[in-house]
Image (cartoon, rainbow, N blue to C red; front, side, top):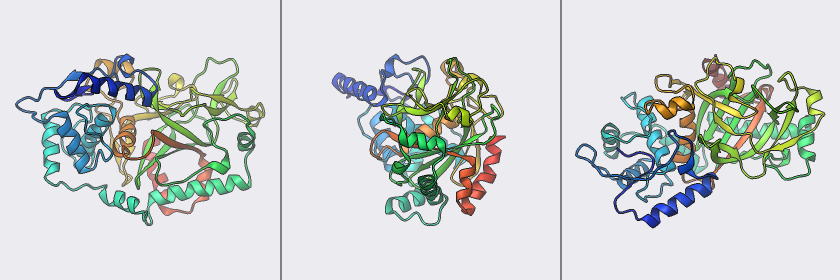
Length: 398
């Protein structure tokens, strides 16, 4: 069984030490000191058995060859990016091919059989979209329409900024929140769009749209705080575009964190509703507003899952065909369940991370461009593809 931390017999101690230093530098934390659970990395030698003969390096090369690990380093160490590519492949087999597979990041005989079948030439459903993206000719696609919406939002708020965005533009210190003039819609980066609903319900009823390599995936979660212990009130991430990178959420699991200096927030005291009076109090930079897992989700309350973080749930997602993919049979409810039960994962949230770390492994940097839009911003586009996607997203939002 190849797991996170498995390494081949020819990998030296120096190679292992170098990997741990690199992983710590990229994630901003010591992976081997994380809390117990699926993201804690403990290096251990891998010995292929009679039913599973592939080495770690052979698995890495196969995943790279078939397209799930395009920027993969063939180093014989199953690190976070290798595991991401492996889980992404397992999820593809499960959700697209409809074959027995659990995306648990455990490379056993069943996953090896699927991988060997793919080496022989299984069709890759996402290949055409990725090739059009590489050629810079995505055509009339939902992916292109979402990028166009980002440009339309920039034009709108450059011409007529809200009071919140006026304060963002005037903020004097450097932060990971971009001024409106610096918003971008480049196709060569990973974009995540959060859509904050106008009505505050304390439910996981906001939508997240991931744009990567010509593909569009949608997730359910919340952009609003559900709890706070701060005397000045709950922090709401400001509308707009922010620079994020992969790192740790409370040493529990890999998440997405502000890149360097924190993102801008508005605090609301007492009612967990953001209004003009809250905005008039001004903005503050906050480095703890992560994008992280929020449990199972669906109709559950946000409550203490979020103190201003953007949380993404695990029960289901929409694939590039806008089909609902159910993850409820293996998604955990909380971190304790993930730590104690190897059969439980973070479900749809893992897919988001695996797409970025695995499929996006050849993209520059370790960053995600996160744009928080309001529900009314969707009226900027006349795209029938986005309109159709919004309608189908209702099955995620409950």
